[in-house]
Length: 179
Image: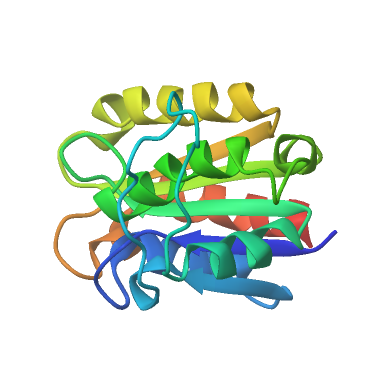
């Protein structure tokens, strides 16, 4: 099973990235940092006769990379009790791809994937991060992705995640499961 990690953070070596790297240590994965790609926000064309207009950015490159893997790990800091805007923008663009005649099998391809979410936040994330986890569940249900689990860690300042023993243990358990 091949694995892709989609990082939604804007800071290099942020807490969500550190926790995710604990999971993927020694595993063969494709790491995709959304901050390294130019991705325009969605212009909703779902109800327009002509549909969505093609956008000249890097979104399709990311989709192609993601679709070539069996397992997708979505790694995001918790910003204002949800995923980052970068991650949300990427997922919002799925609406375009779901209607895009160039990818008529997008939903079918997604339905063959398994997903995990790794998130880190600083304000009672194990409680206040749960609505975000539910949001991912709804997204995955809509496109048919099998939601296999999540880890929520606690960390605010850079490196704080290394003090969250529970999250580090869960990360090690997931690494063994994926290995």
